[in-house]
Image (cartoon, rainbow, N blue to C red; front, side, top):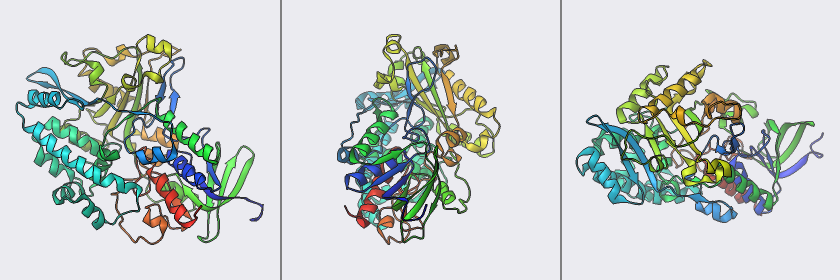
Length: 525
């Protein structure tokens, strides 16, 4: 097929994950001819829902599961038919005080109740007051920084002026986060609860001089100016469904079962995209190509050396239960404790010990994790009979589980057993006794390691952010629209639109929005 007979598009998008769909919707609405190519049989990437267990009517958010960073601006502009539901309980952290089971409850709707929980645990008002000051500061930073994520990329100096708080800038952008945590809080458990947001899917520690922990923390506390993590009604599949509907309604073309095998460009004329379909190899051309895949994947598609592989660091566990387990802390209601983020083995010293073990190549002896129950906030992912029987779902996200620990095929089962054993320590009954059974009588529990994510979703190294997160400011020249929007590659007509872009990471749609804006600057309606 010669260059003149190839199908030509204004924009070809490689990867039909949520960011690719956001970009497609914006560009098609602007009148561009847009083609989305997805390797799998469905769009969504990691933002999908599945019936994970045979004969069990529960559509689980199998990979990603909560939403914070998706801007209300994007939802509004694309007219997305999507409901995100707020969780009243922010978190519950079980512990023991003088040998008696208790816990720290953070009730977002009742500050007085939260204050009393801090006082009962720590014996004074000090930690509660420190909590108020600390999250008052992060809330102010969130309100000032988050709007910039869907604007042209600021310089470091411009973002600092926008934050307008030298102490906050120093704590969050200049010095290891552990310094602020240890300065502001005295209680080990409270310190740990704060630090967990710096470790989600990120293999690092409190005093990492690279500030990787600070970058991770920032993205986990600034979503929509509040840092709230909301439940997508209908599961993550509903998010993808709304985005695909918007892209198709705008006129974008979406092709699934199309694995892109190469991208070629001279940086001037249309770029060529080769993909494999059931009918054979196909070649299309685009004035711009947006890559909704990891930078390492882009390098491979360009025939370049991708360099060291990124490394994911999490264990995702999906469960369906016949009922919620009872807690050792009899004063806590499981329906409240599991509705928010339920912290397990996440004291400050526990987190540091788990990191040290994993860094040495050893599975953490007390794996830290956090759990939440989707169905307490949104039972719509369950079928009517499952609801009638009182079924619930649990999602466990394990920290400090780098891909290197799973080269032994048996490691996944050991990691799962160790994580559930830590959960059992704070339960009045084993969680295994509460699990539902599938059609074959097997317990409804599955684990996904970084290697599973690489194989099933195409994330190199199973890194959920495609690569290590970056601060949301420019670190180089801002020449050209792609650089100004934080989506540039080495090729002027090939742009990143996935989590590996500056200001990527999480289910946000921000890189998709920003890549679309860069294209629209250069290729107007």
